[in-house]
Length: 236
Ligand code: ATP
Image (cartoon, rainbow, N blue to C red; front, side, top):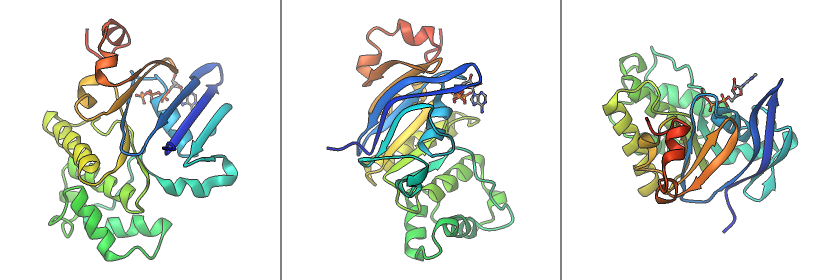
């Protein structure tokens, strides 16, 4: 089966920093693909390239079989992301926020679709409440609903557990699991720490200083695990 996203040997250099070096990987339908690495490993830079916010200096990004470049921005409709949290309108309801953000790309999203994504992220019943009454985790869910509203083939979540307490982290984990298991979503999720995503990721890639140092299923990565301790994704 053709991958949804295929990254071939991409490199991105900022001034003299090799943010991403010769990185290759593929994400297939149904994967929950974990992207692991410490601060500065190159996770966000890779995700930003996948979203066309910046472009690689070399290498190719292929989305659903087509090479992605500046002239092919329509391919981005296959990808939904919360990479930089949307600034939501606190005095408006969750429903209104969802409608406003959905309309930025498509004005004709039917109400049934909005209800469906609220259901998927577990916000059904709270959509009439003002967003300022939402917890941080609920805002995260609404951000995910906004990313899902156009039915992307791939959902990108950049460190969705950042800043959450243990319960919030468990909730996001369960949400990712349910999006994958119950709604067939394909997800790319990044984290600093293995334990935050090991229970949900079907495959994982470990990035260190812009380079891929390991990839595979959990059992492949843990055997042996010294390297994961060395690069900080397992606490020493
Ligand atoms: P974090 O978990 O802190 O977000 P990350 O794995 O997402 O880390 P990146 O943000 O991709 O890492 O950063 C990779 C490297 O590229 C870092 O050394 C960072 O300082 C550098 N970098 C990223 N964006 C820029 C930029 N716009 N200009 C200069 N350097 C940058």
